[in-house]
Length: 438
Ligand code: S3P
Image 1 (spheres, rainbow, N blue to C red):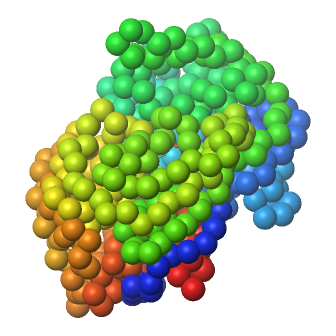
Image 2: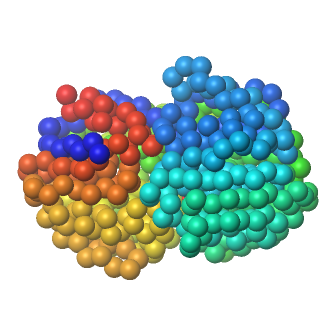
Image 3: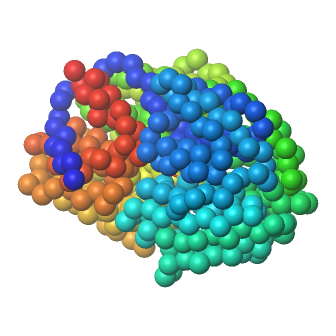
């Protein structure tokens, strides 16, 4: 454990550039590892989760080499040519690595075992085991469909048409990636749109992938298998989910004015900004442009008095990782914020509804925990209580960073039990926060 107390340190001022997008970084390495030739990546997130993906792709035959800060070169083996890994694949804390790689392995003649840390070993894998079994793969999982588990890939795998029972980009991506080496057309039907980085990048690498949107918003995604991927040059945009902590920090700490450069603003990821603006937050988009096939802008964020609102559950998928940060903003807003439709938060790196309710409750916020959301009565900007109690983060990086931000508007600071998990997604978080406060 590496505990740390986060204290109020005055207004946050300056410019930062958050690290590369975690979802996009995973996918660059996976698709690069399946393309024949060299894929060059700049701006790659060098967090532990992405490094777990890199190690797994190396174990299955690809060359994945770091050439400088965020600059990586990947030489792929070609779709269908992944090698049998010699040992178990260590997924660490990373659900994305696990679920997407289970998809890849499922249509290759490979048997791979997946293991992870205590947090990952509690998370449900049945959601990918179901469709991948239909495609012909077989599984030996721990109780409840959990890690550690073994995947036996099928050759040839069978193309399926799969309607997502949960709004999950990981499940969608697992099926599409399995579809890459499956003869014929694999179809994913997505009633509620989730992040579309896999679709964008598969197309970018030359896969035959089509998306049709029906009048009710349902997306029908098809991919033609036995694809040949062409290597790419990719610049990874900054991660909006990492920017989220600094957006909220700048909004709640009086006198703050922060510019966050190069933030990815893919509409399937940008829900938090819309919600915070509705709460009265001043967030300006400067210099809009495209990076790595994704919309990007610099964000100018100024301290703003926030008002509680009712958050439309329909926006949840586009800010699914940002709720812990939003709950902190809500705890400092004027009035009541109501959130609902958030059952998925209970199966993230931790049960984020229970853990954030407990954490914010500990520092004196008024929280009602419901089955599928939190109702938060804010302080109207008044500092949160100092607390003698240490906040339990349950190996969840986003809980740690959210409560670190809450500590900036507390009377005596907030003590976090363990800051190590922050390195899974945002290794420079603490240094960046320190830099802005200085
Ligand atoms: C991710 C999808 C989301 C998100 C996770 C990253 C991805 O998970 O929470 O951090 O890269 O596809 P779900 O698919 O479980 O919603």
